[in-house]
Image 1: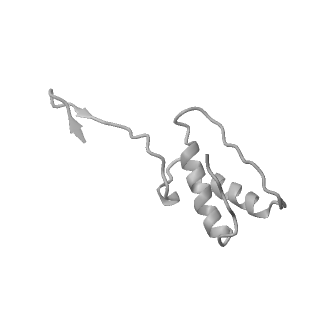
Image 2: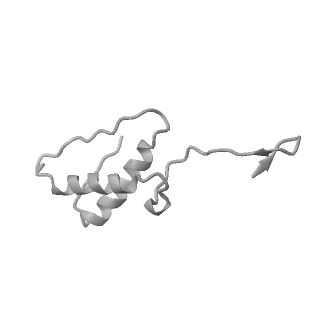
Image 3: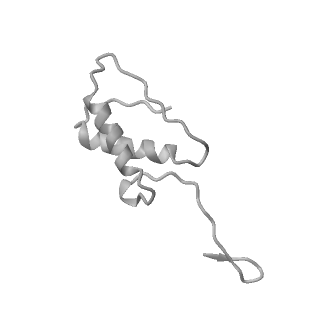
Length: 84
């Protein structure tokens, strides 16, 4: 916690995406696990494209990080993912 020149507390919110689902406070983990399960059970021999859209700051990168974490556990390394 920081204080300004008058001694008032300054609270800063960081816009850093989470990587570890155990830090999830906004209940994105269950959604990410659902998406990862859907990806793992798809019949997509030639691949597919998945898009996640939302406004700035809505948690897209955090959700993608959680999906990637879940994919790593669910797919035994069989899923190849390119994130752009």
